[in-house]
Each structure stands twice: as C-alpha cells, then as structure tokens.
Length: 294
Image 1 (cartoon, rainbow, N blue to C red):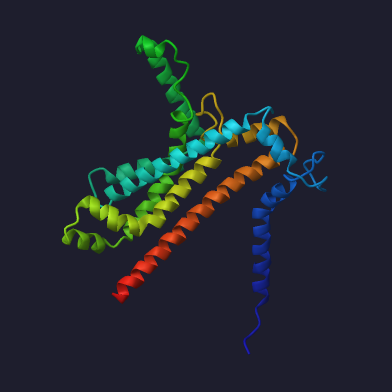
Image 2: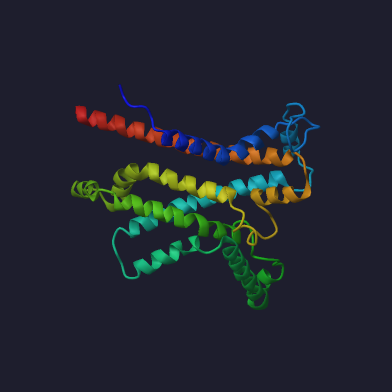
C-alpha cells in the first residue's frame, strides 16, 4: 500500500485552487452578469436572463462607437499579426548567422519591453506631431493643405502595437531557430533544393506550429492593448479604449456584455490556432508514419 499524501500537498492544492479562482473568477462573474435581464444591474442577483445587453451593444446608438471600434480593432489585429509573423520570421532567419552589429540590433529590438507602455505611446504621439508640423511647414501644398494629422490606426497606432508584439515574436523565433536542426536544410541543399525551396518545403513545415503561435501572440496582444494605444490612435479609438470609456460614462451590464464579446473573440482566435497546430502535427505524424513504412 502506498503512503498517503502529506498535509503539505493539500495546503498547496488549496492554495492553487484559490489562485485559479482569483485568476478566472472575475471573468466568470462578468460572463454571468452580461446576461442580465433588461432591468438588471451590475451586481447579483440576476434580474432575469436574456441577451438584451448584447443586442443593445450591437445596435449602437450609445455614447461610444462599439461596432466601429470592433471593426478597427479586428482589422488592426490582423495587420499586426501578419507583420509580426513576417518580420519575426525574417529576423529569425537572418540571426541564424552572426553579423556585425547583431547584438546591438537585438537589444534595440527588444528594448521596448522594458520601457513603460505609456511612455512609448507618448513618444510615438510626439514623433507624429513633429511629422505633422514638418509636413505643414515644408511639405508640398497638395499634401499640407488638407492635412489634419498623420496619426491614425494604421500609422501611429500600428507602430505602437508593433513595439509590443514584435519583441515577443522575435524571442519566440530566436528560441525556435536555436533548436532547429540544420541538417534537414543541408540535406535539402545536397539534393539540389534552392534556398527558397529549402525555406518553403523544409524549414517552414517544421516550424509552422511556432509561426502560428507567433501570429497568435501578435493578434491577442494587439486586440487587448490599451496603454500603447492611448496616445497614438489619433481620432478613432480601438475597442479596449471604448471599453475604458464605457466604464466612465455608463453603469449598465452593457460593459459586461462588451467584455464577454471581446474575451470570446480572444478565445476563438486561440481555439483556431490550437486547431491549426493539431492538424499540422497530425499531418506530420501521418507523413512520418508513411515514410517509415516505405
């Protein structure tokens, strides 16, 4: 007979359960309260059960532009995801061989992780205001005449989000390529493959789950970002910024409905990424089994 578990095990199990409840409890509460009835409030008990606040949220007409902010955040997140994958993959391939200034370039690329987000946002906003002044004072008339500002979702806003997503993508790709077995690529080159063919048919299929992970990082970090967006978005807000505005302008479960919707999008993206990774690994396992039988 095996010995029973020590009291320390149960203390640690209780502490872990409390930590999980502390971590996910607020999200569960918000999810439940978002289904309040039309006369419901921000606290328990529930006054009915309905989707009234979701319908009100998407019908618009409120103080903030939820549908427009949702569309902007979705488009921005997708663009950030694509650029994060492309730039991180390119940097990972380049850094496989050392070159002059590579260490300095690496530290410059990841330095934004240690700079306070609000400082980064203020710096980007100041940079674009200086650009606006330069264009208005020295630019051609056709450009300076009607220019209000160069700040916007896909200019300063995109740059602000990339300062947050790119360092994570770079660190992931550097870790992947540090463990990559170069013999696969050498074998492909010995068989006559060009560098492009080696990348397309050998390197990418092997690291594709990690590439999907980098894309997941890029989208979710952009989707939820608010501090770096606060000063850099120009005239139009992203969805997290509209959510912050709601918390200071209304006191209805519409806030919780918006929180549930945004969390649902994040979980949906994560689920799609995990499903894609499972398909890729199943396909690789099937090809490996077929090659072994051959």
